[in-house]
Structures are given as structure tokens and as C-alpha cells.
Amino acid sequence: MSCIMMVMKNPIEEKLQNNWKSIKKEIRRKAVHLSSLWIPYIIYILPGQTAVCLFLFLLIGDFIFEYGYYKRYRWARKTFGSLFYKTLRNKEITNEKFHPTGSIYVLTAALICSCFFNKYAAIIGLTVMLVADSAAALVGKAYGRIKIYKNKTLEGTLAFFFSAVLVNIILSTIHPFGMCSVLACSAATLAELFEDKIRIDDNLSVPLLTACILSL
Image (cartoon, rainbow, N blue to C red; front, side):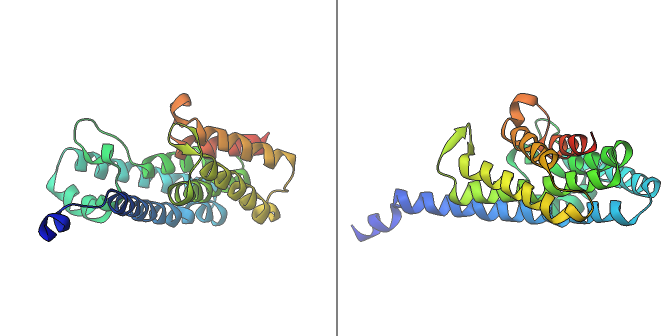
């Protein structure tokens, strides 16, 4: 009887373990996400053309490695796979169809922002995406209880909005904080919330939309 009890798992305990595993994976993913804060810093310190060339070079290199991983090339599996496997989403691991990771969208956003928006709007747009998206995911995973749209929670959405506002306040030394900033944060929050409706990855839509509104 005791053996049977040991084999049987408590459903609540099993659910908590699965939730904790999910949170740990999200922490790894967002740690990589936040490590990309060097991108807005590069835009700040480098001349525009130099930053554009750097982002283009990195984007091409990233795409080659990710596509090589998808095609199961050994060199890509040993490099890209060994470094980022634990942070990849299920659709990025399966080989049914090529799914770019968030890094491709982040570098694409950095390239477009550097080309078409002023430096300070680009910096804020990219920083909002990196910080607010991480805050929303971690708060939503750990504390999200009230579902408002599909798998998105009220707690995660509020975390996104307020962290986006905080970023704008902190960076008000390079771009004045005002109603335009609040409008940009609101639009970015909606873009993240309804990502599946607009069919654009939030790593791309959030910085472009934020930078666009701040530039107008």
C-alpha cells in the first residue's frame, strides 16, 4: 500500500512542480531577453550608420545559426542549440516548420528603429520592449490569476504598462515624459496583449509602435 502511495502523485503537488518548471524556464528566457539591453546602449554611443551595420551583421548571423539549428546541422546544434536550447519555446524546438526566435525580431526591431526613427525614440522603444515584456511575462507566470484575453492576465498586463511608464520616466533625460509617453505605453501594452490579432511578434511591434508615437 505504501509503495502504491509513493508511486501516486498528489495532483496539487504535481501542478505546483509544473508551474515552477514553467516559471524557471521563463526566467531563463527573460534573462536572455534583458541581456539585450546592450542594444539601446549601442544606439546611444555609436553613430547611426555604424549601429545599422552592426545590427544587420548580427541579424544575418543569427538567422544563419537559427536556420542551421532548424535544419539540424551539427555545427548549429553544437553552438546555438547548446547555448539556447533551455530558453526555446516548444514551437522553436520542433522541426515541422521554421520559427524564428525572439532574438531575430529584436535585432530586426533594432535595425528598423535605427534606420527610421530618431536615436532617443529608438532607445526608449527598445528598452520598453525588453523591460516591460520581461516584467509582464514573469509577473503573469508567477502571480497571474485574472485572465483577460486568452493566456494573458490582468496582473501581467498591468506589469507591462507600469514598467513601460517607469522606463519612460527614467529616460526622461533624453526624451521628455508627458502625455505622448503615456499614449506610447498604452499602445505598446495593447500590441503585446493582442499580439495574435495583429499577427506581429511583440518583440517587433512594441518597439516600432513606441518609437513611432514618440517621434510624431
